[in-house]
Length: 128
Image (cartoon, rainbow, N blue to C red; front, side):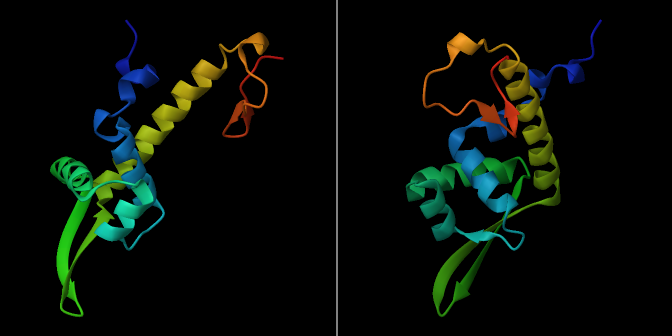
């Protein structure tokens, strides 16, 4: 019997796979000190309510930490990756890369369209 860890699809974490959460986590990955709610809202092109909902889900999964503070007498929400969130998200990205490379290996040259980039992570997606 095969090990479930051998299946990259089984390692895709649903908590990160939603586009809004993927955008949040990707933004936070490059910001070790975290980002403000306003920065995340702008970067992800989300409404306040949509961003709040995604942040609550990520916080519940222990992927992010959320701290509220005042800056110049104005409330500010800071969001940062937790240690667990960083570890889990990097594992998710590795699984996603494996899935993309698996799919890439199945693309025939006649399946691509002109003008579409057919490389991912520096790997040509079409078969020679």
